[in-house]
Length: 596
Image (cartoon, rainbow, N blue to C red; front, side, top):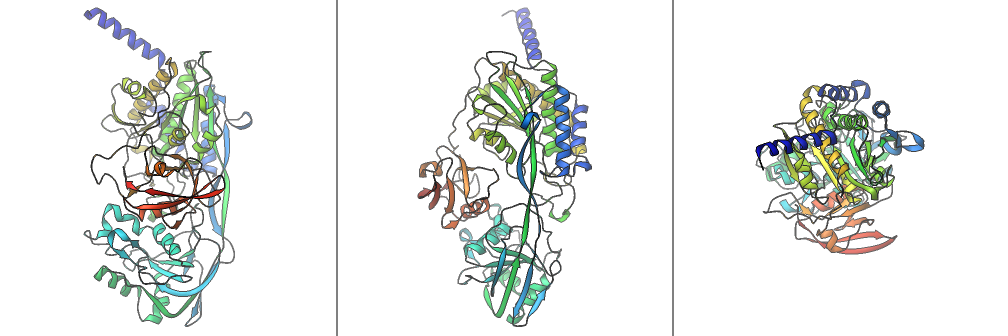
């Protein structure tokens, strides 16, 4: 081809791309939207709160101003669903030392219930279970030889030799043993009627944790007590908390025992509050009569952590606003920008559905609800593009996840890269809103500019974003959406096999291969929305729609229980899985594999 013909071809191509992908709003406009969404007035946009409602109203006003049709309930832009919003003390809440010397303890001063506690009252003898850890892979078990059945268990926070970098508990695959969830569920699985957590003697802060959280109860009474109370409970044994911790740390071996004569009564009454969250949905009908029945969904979650809570990685800043500028005011700003851009251009051949999801930080609640109640038929959705944490572009590198989830998608995405360096990952599974669409049988593309140290902390503020990078990612998304919207043949969903790890040690712990339904669930058990092809779960016969109620001998009431049970096993272990299918209980056998 002659140089002139090459130049003409490039010019035609450039004009075609420009015509197909409308220009997006400027970096300044995008940053202004991030500032609005992450302002102090939105108080971190926790779902079901006035701050989140304020953000939703702003997003709806942008959709309306762009000329999008309402895609929510009853002709509005809002698609409502119920969410847990918090927890408060009911009545009564009491902790009493019954013996050897009776003493009533002060709520809020001596003890506080934990948000994951069940309600009720128990009375039992006191046993000390050290750090409350059962780690078969490390040859360590605080419950070995200890009968905790029906008793109240006192457990230290942290892990053995927590300040020693060489401690086996400091390995990345062993961090979870120090988590509160392991200690509480482990106590329940050993038959304890209640657990009392006490802050480690070496901890710098001795204050009681605030009552904050939205989790389902974990079927055991649970409270946190002060170190002074812990020492008082141990007094009949002649030991103090520091003695117990030092003995375990010196020997790197359990030192559990029953406290002779010590008996405790714990009563907990918690009220779990609920509220309403909304997805914000706008529609832009397609312009091609032959293709307008098909749609591309462009979405991102606008909710964040509010004032911290369970998802915060800054527990020492309890109550501080977590503004979530990158996570995910950045992606929401891009969704609004794309809505304005495509609406100003007169639309696209296929219908475009713009959704700002709530409830993502609670477990993909908003996207799961939308998939079950789509504004446009799910079976006619040809691609879902998810924009989550796209405000910190570094070295022009953009992560594009799910490139192999649809036929031809990898090549199409690569062709739109422009000046960006794409890091493509074919596997679509990751903890963000696109997962609900992929498990629903739709191709997906998840755009992400990478993790950073401000994630889920109050320091995720607008001034740390890269506005020009945000504009570049938004423009790339516009090119992808435009290309998919105009293609004669849309991407078709691909059922992906579980990828193989090239070497051992590619992940931590065993692999089972189920995708939980992250919708809000009140009944016990974990509902499965999808099963990884080629996974141990699929080989065992687990199907979408099954409810796991037991795993490897652990009663599964919540997702935390399933995580606990899985972490307690090793690759190669054969486990029994009890499921409910069509209300009938079935037992399946699976052989766990190495995590991919």
